[in-house]
Amino acid sequence: MTSAETITTYKAILETTGKMLSAAKNNQWDDLVILEKECRALTDKLMNGGPEPILDEDLLQTKIKMIHQILGDDAQIKAITQPWIEKLQHMINTVDLSRKLEQTYQSFENI
Image (cartoon, rainbow, N blue to C red; front, side, top):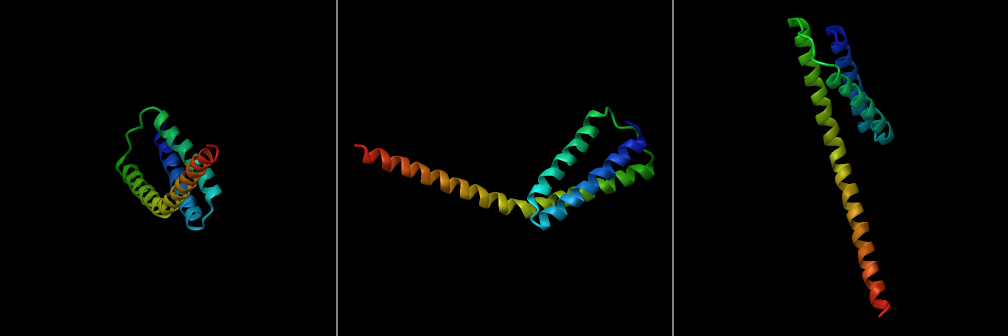
């Protein structure tokens, strides 16, 4: 991967995480999932594109700045989605417990 391709890929990741943050803020969960897949494909491209080229100082600083922005977006996305995920987990656990209780009571009815 060339220097230009590397920086272009980081820019694409930054744009995607920005869109992900917007989707999370607007409760657009389907869009968030699609964007997460796009972001995963871009990060896979970086990871599987061979060793990153040595960047000159300006490009290196640009890359570092973008990485900080990406991490900031990611932290905000997690702050938005984590309570929703915990609520969903609680609902799933409640339904599972209800099913187990129902099965237990049904087995006693058959005795």
